[in-house]
Length: 271
Ligand code: DGL
Image (cartoon, rainbow, N blue to C red; front, side, top):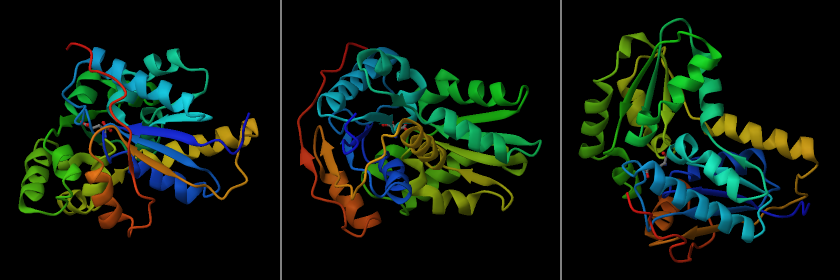
């Protein structure tokens, strides 16, 4: 095991940077290799077959680039394509659903857990299934939010259309009963300030990134694979890297290294 090898991560776009951010804070010695599949964003309306094909192609590429571990920094792929990714590589592959469910389950006080996610994640039932495995009968209310990802990719984080999308989607949830609102798409933490304004004070916003970073830290510790650091990161896009440049300015103070455009790694499978 090469301890200095990078941790690979991927998402359809910039959403997985919310997981990368958590890994950088928690594990500053680690190098990250990030792929934003901007050639195929958004993922949320794609079929399970397409998602398995896209996700497993990127996972294979990350292993070929020498990654010691792959984090599926995308709820949609974690929900429907985690096994497909694990089948094509020898390195461990970690998803975000389990950690998100664990954090939301810990915040549950006998009310309802709200889940906002992509259409594919909602349809998969992955979060209700994981939550009810932790706590049988736990009430879950889900809503798909397809307008969010294009807004976040464009950096429109507090524009009138972002405000109205947040109001419209949250109106579909029983807000007064929510103990926790699980941000079941890695793009959504970028909208947290707006989501916070529309939820009750007692409702905890749950970002699965925190628990996912804990899982990665535990794996590094248990396997003796932790890097001695300092970690240098690579930011790659399969299509345009404009959204990576934008989020670097908006949310990372321009501190991320310049992104690379690596070309599409997979042709989408027929829907
Ligand atoms: N950020 C991803 C997720 O967590 C994908 C969103 C999309 O591309 O629709 O589900």
